[in-house]
Length: 117
Image 1 (spheres, rainbow, N blue to C red):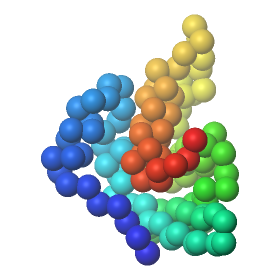
Image 2 (cartoon, rainbow, N blue to C red; image 1 turned 180 degrees about the vertical axis):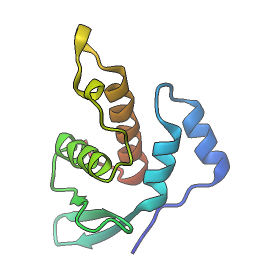
Image 3 (tube, one colour; image 1 turned 30 degrees about the vertical axis):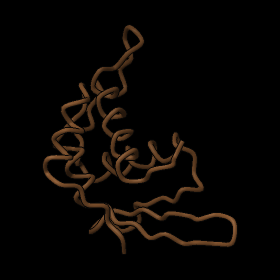
C-alpha cells in the first residue's frame, strides 16, 4: 500500500494557488485514499480506494470523467457532501456548489494520481 505524503508547507503552497476549492474536502480525500500500483510489461495500473469505505474505488484504466463521477458518487452516498436539490440545479448554466466540488476532485486527482489526463 503506497500513500503519497506531502508536507504541510507543500500543502499550503498548493492550496494557496487555487481558488474555489473545498479545502476540508480535499484534506479528507488526501487523508483517506490508498493506492496500489501494478506494473505490467508495457504499462502500469494504479488502483485507488478510500480507507474504511469498501466498494468505492477506481483504477487508472478509467477516464478522468468516469473517475470524477465515481468520486462524486462516493461522496454523496456516504453523506460526506450534502446532497440537496440545489446540487442538480443548473439555472444560468453554472451550479457553483457542483463546480467547487468538481474542482476539488480534479485537484485531488492531480495530487494523488499523477498522469491521469
